Image (cartoon, rainbow, N blue to C red; front, side, top):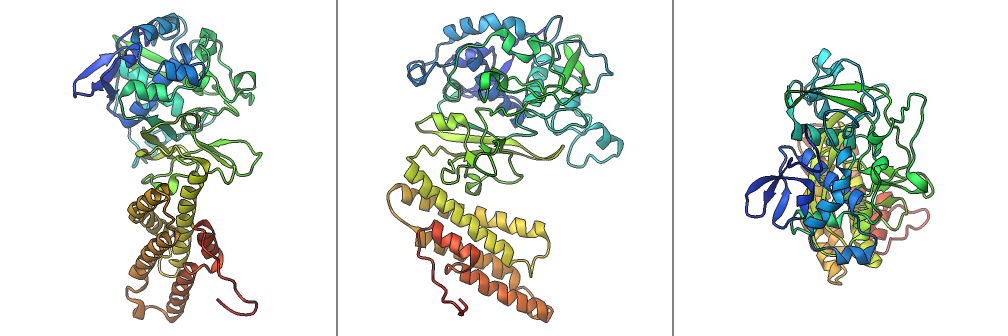
Length: 482
């Protein structure tokens, strides 16, 4: 039997490289660097779990209380967590952590199903598990099972008829402020303001809200989130244990169907002002400055993007951990883990940094369009677009630092974007150009002309680039070509 409040079950690594296993209240002890699970998705989920436990048991009431209690106090945390222990048994009798209130009687699935990158039943049946895996985990020890169960419920992807996704959809993007001072400062920096929760606020302590008739579960009392944001139960599950190991998972469909929740550790977006906010999901590949808007930076000019609550409510120094599964519906494509700068800026300066990003987005778009005559495949052009942002990242960081120092550099950033776009275009366009069909040669020459004109401010994308960089857009006289 494992109790997730009282027992030592979380592997951690200390600042001096030593390793240990701790109980949750010990996250407030000094010297702990980070969780030390064997997979990155378990580590990011462990951060979320620890933040959720603190928000449940002893959250800061307001900014003043947050400042006052920044110093760790493991004795206080142990005392505050103790009353919640009855809700945090993993196996045994009574309500069980993140498991259906009632016993389920379906045939158990292998424990492998709890890992997002495991093959589903149809994938195994069709022998199609090329990018996912089958049969890696026959049994799980209780500690690992607890962490995997939490990760699965928090990030649950689409899973077939009636198997609900997490309240943030499958594979949400997670952003955490990291003061780079160890485990406790990270957890405390990401804990929202609030009041301690009751045991009945935890969804496994009451009958499951079965959603087979389309029933939706909304945040409590008109709020956008509650403690259940950290302990959501979209899947109806019961673990099967034998001799101290979890050897199977019973699942039934139509768990809790969450609607209109906003998780405090994830960014959101909407298509238009006034529409419902939707969770941001990571894209496969490298997370860089092209992905900042609405995630690292506010996107304040549009009103359609909103970084995670904890990024908006915290000041100070440090970095931001950006992590999550990039999904293609039910299929995992990539797991993202990136460390980005924490931009805690005044609105005017934040807007200037966003302008640099949007100018690069427009430059990348015109490059991608110009490559159509020489790169027919969409995936090939997307790869060039990705290379464009990777290659210009160092220059972007330089120009950002200049902006922060009060140096305007729109023309220099324009020159950097132009040089890289033309270099990539010509690498592909000039290769065996004379051997191509004349129609393709003509289209290539026209594409090269339009690409160059965009960096002079002409055309749809050129106008956007110049406007974002504060440069004067050229006036096209009526009846004359640019």
